[in-house]
Image (cartoon, rainbow, N blue to C red):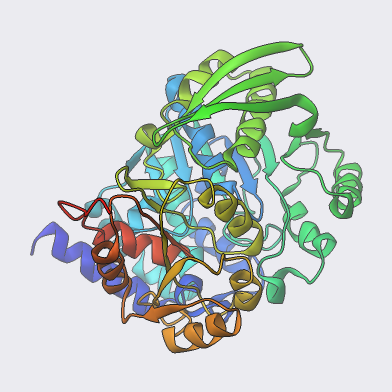
Length: 444
């Protein structure tokens, strides 16, 4: 049997046996950390065998995780990176020095630990976290950058003792699970703040500041606000890079920054990363601001990051973004309006447990929409999306798949148009596998 076949059978076992939040929603969630701790104990507690940075937040935690991993890799550290969900290949979740773990390693891990898996009966996310920690320990990483999946306090990743905690921002998402106010959501995210461990807060809000302050006092954890350390002024942009003047407020210095993180919203993540780098350098890591700035120019190439204001094609522009909640979509749509285009086309789909009505209210009414749903049980059916979009004043056509929607949009486009693909990680993931640019476009 080939490695590819064994790998696919292993994934089928994991997907079919274990409840998966990204596919079915909150029914997959376990109420506490018990299963993760049992899995880790059965694996020899790998979470205690490497240093780590723990990153939570409503938006930006994936980009921040990849950018910080790039900094460590650039500095010569053997760097583990755990993120979720994956876009195309399950192994995107577990990387070491930018490389996904091998298919053979995944297959061997599941085969070797099948008895443990079946005795604990974990969720898909719980076994994935344990798998990542086992990989990092076995490979002897110098540092692991670990992104939370959902929330923080009860997230399966919250069994590590990091050298630094980071909370990128707080906005509304997963309100049925995390709370209906920003303060309630912040309380869940603040669960990653550990005793005596410094914490970076990426963006400040009046509603959340007290939550973080009280938690930091309780845990004797010093707080550092990225916005107090850095300002970013964008100088220019193109389809490959953004260019900033970065102002270090504490040292009164100005730095030229070029980054392949091309979304406007990345300026907040860059402030957070640079603040974290300063703190981590004080903690004994041989990293620097100058080295971090070098690393920011090639985050995607170094770590494999995709789906964040991701230019699939420069002419005419085809851009893919995983934005899926009102805060993230607001940022993406603001930048979308700045893309020169005679006609803007949007391939759009959501999962059913989002505030779709609020999200749809953000989209411009003069765009052409191609509605679809990803091929997962959690996806909002396209007929329901069309009904909600019509109520929001958006006009478009339903398609049975992401691939069909993209093909229709590409066929309709001229050389003076632009296409945005967004609404969920799963729309973006299917777009990355199905997008096939047309060889020519009419110029009119």
